[in-house]
Structures are given as structure tokens and as C-alpha cells.
Length: 213
Image 1: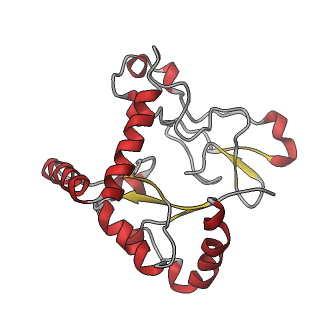
Image 2: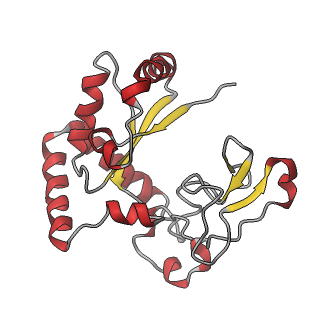
């Protein structure tokens, strides 16, 4: 059972999503950090949105709560809006986007952690550019060995939707169940390779081929 644990948490902006699990489950989360982080198998997935657009603020938020650990933070980009809630968190004006860009450049100048995070992502993206910008999806859901399953055994389009959600094409995001995995079929997403404008996009590598419903 050599698995890793990643917890989705937006640090100082988690309250914009709903109740903060750190408020009533901090001891359990710390137990996971103490157990898995030394093995290199523990991280927090942090997204930026209108609640917080500062990578430094997110880094410091986790440092304050786990001063004895060097916490691994993943993602650290603007949230991928795949539903109404995500769009609400990205209701940013043109001026906001310019300010976020300036803030990012400033933080890269003065924070080694931010610089390393951004440069590593950029170099990984550039490294994928070999004729075709991206070989697979960022989330890995186009791989035959990866599925998104909830605690009831429902198989969903991806990890960012629920079994009761309906895609824009009218199809359910519940695409099957573990009891009958052979009949599972994705009908509510379009791979980037099926979109002509994506195949010729010069920045697709940086988006890493997101699955879009």
C-alpha cells in the first residue's frame, strides 16, 4: 500500500470554498503530514483565486501551521474553472489580471520558493514540446490506468466533479460504477486532440492539455 496523500486546500483563501477542515481536523491532518511527508509522499494542492492571488501568502500560511516541516505545495496557479463555483472564484476584471501578473513577477524576484515553483512548471511544460505540444492531459484522466472514484464506488469523469453533476452536453458526470467497470465510458469530456484549435495552440504545453467538458 505504497500510496501518497495530497490534500486540496487553498491556505488563506480556503474559507471562500467553505468550512476549513483545519478548524476541526487539524490533529488528523498533522498526523498525515508527520507520517507521509518524511517519505516524500505528502503534499497540499493549492489554487489561487479571488480569495488569494499570492503564492507567498499561501506558502507562509502553511509554514505557520507546520513550522517543523518543509511543506510540499502543488498546483499554485489560478483555479481551473470547470463549473459555476469555479467561475465565481475567478470573477476577476482585466485590471485584476494585470495586477496578478505584476504580483507574480514581484514574488518571483523576492521568493526563492515561488521562483523554483514557477520555473519548474515552465521547464516541465517546455520539455513536453516535441512536435505535438502535449502528449496527454494534465490530470491524467486520458490514461487507461487512471480513474476517478468516489467513496460509493461511482466512477466520474474526473476528480473535479461529482456523480450527481451534469455536463454542459446534458450527460451525467457519473460514467459508471466499480461493480461494472468494463461498461464505463466517458461521454462528457472532449480530449484536446479532438479540438483543431488546441492542436495548433502555441501555449497548450503550459495549460498541459486540460480536459474540458
